[in-house]
Length: 367
Image 1 (cartoon, rainbow, N blue to C red):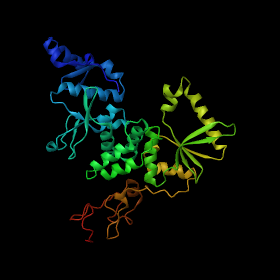
Image 2: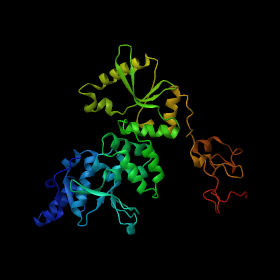
Image 3: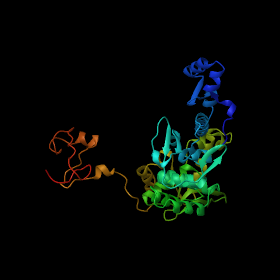
Image 4: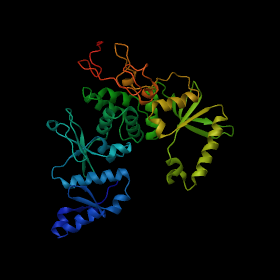
């Protein structure tokens, strides 16, 4: 990914030597300049026009310029350098490799990640960074299944890594934390997945026990036109499609058409698919990462496969050995249960947390 040239950065040392220290401080207070890292600044106009990924790259370059001891970037920061897709919230902090004796102490937006196994490091555009295969394996060890699939799928699709490379790195980290999660994520990787949204959706489907039978399934309508769906379930003759707002708003997708025209063309396309006897289920970002919502959509579309229930959190499904309800009640249930129905009486009553060994529920003995 392209970075800002070094001449665009403003350093405190240069401004101080030129006698413009107080002007620099005033421009930061007024908002005309942005402090990227200690002693490194950038014009507000350049910062505001940069994308989220480009802003992260600017912070990486600023960190490199502000410290004499060079850091090697890893995990989320390495993913940005290699162009791997991540959720926006993952880009808030800069992640670097820390020596094992430093543990993982972090501060000021700088997260240090330690590892007992030596990581592969290379140089890219002047930045020390973990290799692509190392970065993919590290993220597969840390991220949830859906987000990890987004990284693995993209790396396989673009040829950044190969399956053999991933297997070799997984073997090197076989005894490290998150190795089982990484092996599961890499095992489900598929280069046919075309976006992070599709990968997150597929991860949720796998957790639900209803993975699709095929990706990018082609269907032919009565006129012989080829229509393609993101996911396909043969037993239900069901096509699943996930779309974000960018499909109807971003210039790269609309190709100069108005949002209403894009929406109308998509409706006509879906009608042509349904005319072939195929059902269609659609969802967006909000449903993709929520198993309950995605399961509801797939059931409504006729998917007969048994979907695992995610209706109630584990902490609420717990019932202690005395046969009583958990010590925390949901607000809706507290409001609907009267004095006679509540173990301690009163609609707003709450049980105390049991004391003693045995975890958050105590020893489980009746007292």
